Length: 488
Image (cartoon, rainbow, N blue to C red; front, top):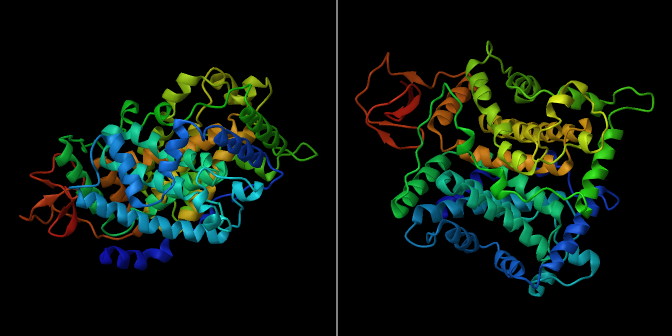
């Protein structure tokens, strides 16, 4: 525990600042606040149900709460005989608390029960939290953080893990201690935190140790090999959004009214009174194309280095292999719900007419553009953590552009970013991705820390980037040998 605290202290100042990439709590006159209120009423209606009982169990932010909850999901006792995993949970919790406290200092947002002078599901803590900012929700942050980490450890149960992580956020709304916007902010903070943790020395090794421990206890062996010359995963191997996200709002529901209002606001933001594109409209138009080249163009100025096939071929290769997954992971959910896109349902024009015909009969929920933009930002932030806040802020606006353009509802965009978080976690189970990520990192740094064993042979044992010893590298990539990174 002492070692963990020392490590946390050394990196505490490096955590992403929520105020630099999240929109902050909604104004009481905004559409989001109306949704917050409607979700609060929804939560109160479930308090006397079994779902309310789960919300009580989910309330405590002790590590044991999450270990017990995910033990049920994995049908494995995570609380005993798993010291490596428990150490990892402590490590993550310490950073999670630090990030939560840092974020709450940036905002002052009254909790639902305090604003309405109402009772909660757990009255004993009302005085404790009455004057503590509601934004963001700690249960959502910690629950989704652990869901992402466990997806790396037990990808065979990824959908169940992610569904449980989502439920932690909903529980804090049901209890009356948090608004829906607090919960969503907690989810996004969790993804930013996990990306940053992956830049800290030793974190990936802790994940590997916990995965080995889990596999030994359960007998489940999750493959990690991949092919860097092809897509890292088939779509069927990725987390299935249909299985861990809620259904989109029904057209007759009050929640849809919030989507409709956001659509009208987005449409109004496209042009000024003279019919010329506004800055918001122009940016949405710039972001309309879903391609690796467009993502490279959008993020290069923020990332701090040109990302292109000629200037940075390793970075470009990484982006090219990642970009199909962002949209691809939304497809099963889109096909299942077949939610009409805003311009189709409203029978109106979009900001960009050329895409209207071929997207007319495709599902709207969740947004592939929002997913892809958030996913690329998380990956690039792992290479250049100094740019993380700016990357995520740009990714957030990229997603919002889909509302402005008329191609997606706000709830499509919101859930798209969670899909990205799930893909990002899953990618870290793929050796080919980790190898390409390391090559891209070294290229960004402009260093020659990686030596080529073809020029300098060694008899030392060889390990992959997850710390697992290999008898002989089966495909080209980056490995660890004699304490150094090597290329085979």
